[in-house]
Every structure is written in C-alpha cells, then in structure tokens.
Image 1 (spheres, one colour):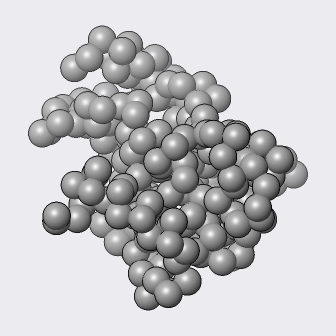
Image 2 (cartoon, helix red, strand yellow):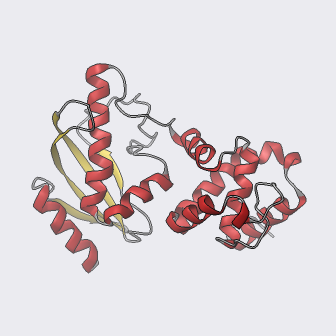
Length: 242
C-alpha cells in the first residue's frame, strides 16, 4: 500500500471509525464497514442513516477514483442510479473529479460524493423523489453534462470537442472544434480550459469512447478532419487494428 493511500485511509478511519475492514485484492485496496452519517443539504431535512459499504481504491488512485458498492442489500437493485455491476453511480466521471479535487482525499471523496449519494437515496426512498437536480443515469447523464457545459445539442459536435481535447489538450490558437469558424480562445475557451484542467487521461478517454460508440451510426455526419482525428486517436491508443 502506498504511503499516500495509507495516510488517507487513517484520516478516513478517524472520522468514520467503523470502516475498519481493510484488505488487498489484485491492484486494489479494499475498505469495508458500516458508514454512519447524519446529514442535511440546503433546505432538506436531516437524515440519520447507516449503510454497509465497500470502497475499492485502485493502485492508480488518484488518477482513477475509487469504486463504491453498498454491501448490505439496502439499495434496491432497480434503483436508477445503481450500475449494472452493483457499483454506485455517484455522478458523471468529470463531475466526480471536480468534486474530488476540492479536497483531494479519500475523506473528501466520501464526504462530497458517497454521503450525498446515500442521503439522496434515503430521501428518495422516504419521500418518493430526489432532493437534488438529478442527472440521467449512465451515458445519457454524461451527454447531458456536456450539452449543458458546451451549449451543444448534437452528439457528433460533442464528440468533436472531446476528440480535440484528447489529441491536443487546450490549444487556444486552433480553430474551435464546435465548427463555429472561430479560434478556441474566441469561442469555447473557458469550457475547454476547464475540461482540460479537471479531466484525467482515464476519464477523458472513457468519455471519448462512450460518445464515439454512440456516434458510429452517424459517421456520415463526421467531417473529414474528425474522421482522421478519430483514426489517429484509436491507433495511438491501440484500439484499432492496423
């Protein structure tokens, strides 16, 4: 176990004293135990609850963030914000990183992501609706995030933005991939700079591949430059056979 992770686990256990079952499996550190909390958000009521959770911290943390499961069978299997593999769909990958980077620790991850999720589920279970403005689940929620951030509606346009970021990062002097004809610094500068800053290679790669899988049936809408860009990215990432 890396020294950084060991230190952050100790900090986490000081606040949540029942998270004491620590083990190692493959390339992960696993923390299990009851997670008790008393929380309220904005005008919503205080909820006191306890859920058994499993926190799987990859060796590549913090490049790749932990995966969380509820292990006590409390969360309904048909709950819309539960992934098919049983992991909690805390939020979109980029929003998860944005929140994590506010404190950059396992304790912050639990406080800013896991507790609000469990609070939201508990509220939904009691009152029949979500307390927060919930995004759609899965890929649909990822698309919704980019639509809101970029002000673009077409998936192909969003794919072009992600392909640009994946290949170039932030380049203010290049033409904006949205197709406006303006340079990035005169168009989507603020948003692209934000995405470049907060995405990790892992989250950007995954979001690009999600969008690409959705857009393949619309290949006729790809510009010549976008098609070439996608080919270059896939070859570089060794995702397409030569």
